[in-house]
Image (cartoon, rainbow, N blue to C red; front, side, top):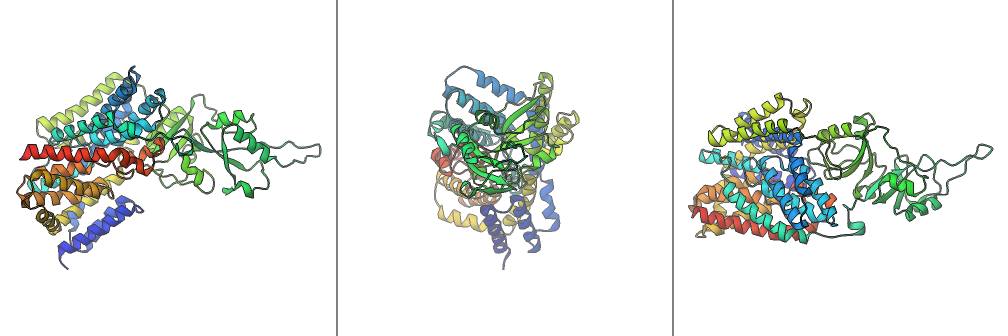
Length: 583
């Protein structure tokens, strides 16, 4: 069996596991790398080269830099001021989407989403619109912004590394900016004029983002008679009062097991009443006349915040109760999102998943620190970060110096950004414990493992075979048609894979096709770069899409409803510009 076939089988195996989405993506990448080692497709030295690849270094550095700038509060303050401007909702949303795209071009797009999501949600509420009107356009805007610079998304850095290996030089920092800015501009215009109007306007049970909480209430302790005996609680009367107050009783939790109401014979003080409502727990308890209890923090700065769990959070796959355990019972999950309604057992025993909504209650200072550690995105409560102008200006200056050194003086991007990250850490722009926690380590492992896997796909000849097949089918076609074909193939692949894996596969194929069809390699490589970030059709295509799914109350089909036309625009505009630039 030749190496090309073996490399193809390894890649198909990895793609299948990626698409299955039941195994961690970083583990899939490590397994694929191990298979390449066992089959002799890569050497031990080559297998470790991914860790030192400039793409990996830059991604880690940008995550540290972006987090340091985020902690200065300058970006949040700027978006807050934009939201405070008095103007019609479409214009206000347009300004915020543009701001999010610009932030995403120069920092991690999850951070850009985290900064702007509460602002967009509040603007929607002020306009008496559901958050759904703005959150999906916001997620798409942050994705569009990632197309415009080298560091906008890890896929851009992967394609830059592929270009260095195949053509001898990596992409420059702004090499994709003329094309990326044009495509992003057209996409933003669509979102501002048409896209936000296509988002769903749901009410009732479907509105997962309408502030619907699932939480447990402590039933009242029955009074004892003269002999010290206590009667059973009249649970039917209590449930009727809860319903009249605007809540729905789901079940009773007893010893971490849920008992359905039709199987309930009595209600004891040790039970917990599981309800779903748009009210907060304390408001519901008051409406029922104080008969139900909810534990409240005694801290003078106690706050309540609705958050979403981001990808890469260390809390994923751990029970909800871990938050109380890790904060010495200072922070508590007082309510969960709509997913909790269909789960089994108590809320505390539920497993945390990416995209989950949680309502946390506790001291503000402890909450601020835990949000950073747990990679939790605030949806309803404003950040308590106070902007320090001089410190913020220094952080932005260090970042700008790194960009200028790379662009104007030709220094390696990995070197300048690593130096900027080290400088910000040395100046204590991040707490010492957060320097490493700000790095998305699963993403780093994924990159480091997939780079040598992609190189084996190229050096074995497998990429050349695929490029030959596609090139033969496109023989004689103009550059526009070839760019459209490559873009569509990349987008279809990205429906099932993350954009890093898509870039690893399609980058060498695009270069091979370009050489065979006698087109400039950069033409089709840029087509892959734009298309790899065009994840607008499903919530699983990009992590930002998934993060706004629950807060926006979206269904799977809503993404194609808004994103199909955007995807077509991106393909046609990018292919047209590529044809214009390179013909």
